[in-house]
Image (cartoon, rainbow, N blue to C red; front, side, top):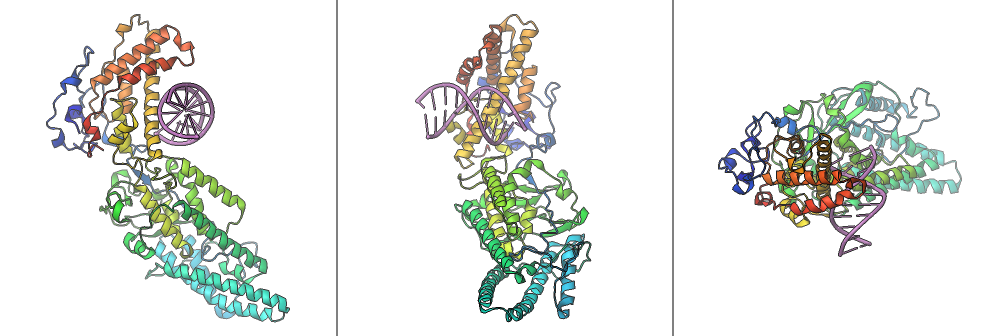
Length: 587
DNA sequence: ACGCTTCCTG
DNA sequence: CAGGAAGCGT
């Protein structure tokens, strides 16, 4: 950090340099004689925070909601559709109503009396999941496993029943059924394997909430019905696997960081579920999960943290910054979910694809159809292309970074998708470490005071802390393109204003620190007003303004490409970026 | 074809 | 600020 380019006003009200410098770094501040000669009469060299002309924005203003550094708010909510969820996803089955099902959603599970009690209990568990406020995720998980146990037991019974019915069929039909049962056993084996690996429940206080709605049915019903149902189930399972493989292939260039068990232990991610209004199950990923990613990313860990209270009690922030060893708060008490689920539109869109994928997995592939795959593919492509600060940048073109609804990830704790979810969570956390942050953006804006057309080399020198991929490079270039755009728009506007105001001589056009033009520029590139804008920038601004003034006064603006000549002039006025911008601690 | 840039749009 | 189209230069 070059003291020569910082004024005392760079400090926030808290006395801490917003750019990470301490007062000690700047105490030796001396005006740079090379930069002090602005050549503009009346200019003050330094901007003080008490200047009545340039407002010193409070730190909170700089870190506005749209500008909050490296933060993603875990806010989206997962609404589990009662027709597809609850215990759904345990098995690759599609629930369907039995012939005895009533219009109000009650289903005949067709169990014998010996299992009706268990069935009722399972029903209670399922419904309780969707209606019980204050029910922890772990409870849900425990209950889900109880459901699973009940399902397995019921399967045995119904297998017997099925075999008995099969006894009266022809030999061909019997062969088909045996074949199907063989498939069924294989499927069960597969899913039991998944279930076994991912059993993370250890809840001690199990709750049996009451039903609020009765639109559920047993997921296992589909397994015991017609051949087509079974084939559909097999197809769903295969589709689910296909989606999984697709996701895997996208992430294939990324290292597997941990085993599933390690993930569960090390992240110790608190699982909370909550039920909001409308009896919709919400599973939230809140609290202080600290994900430790080994080796190369150890110093740049991503983690889910709860933002300190100034941001609001119940907002939890996904931070992509290197704060691996902070564990700000214990998990928030369950049930405070109103603010937790505030929508954050800016962060929602680019997680759509992965959420599609995860929901697909969550549903056990129960949504069969080409349309679903197309939707997933479309959204996933949009994720690959779309890039937004803090949630986007990629190490390689094949490794998109996405913002994933953590609650959805959490919902994937349902056993049959746990392996996939672990993998996705790990990769998600891994990817969060990449890319440009708001801090980089701020730095780029300050760099603009020196260079309007930075070369790739300069960018690489100044942003050495990011992995320079084509994406990152393009984004940085785009940033400066946007900076220029704003710059030239302001210049044209003020040049036209000067003409309208009757400024006759171009020599009367200057850009001082008290001018509206400078204020507008300073507000854009130095919003916190914590940076001492070099006088050279004022000089360049003056030249630019005059170029526009002359061109407009000469009527050159009738030519569609009249600005190009100006651009050509301005691009030659770039200065060297101070070494402080290239130092390892300037970022 | 590719990279860079501006322009336009959201 | 990002995405995309279009233009330009190499």
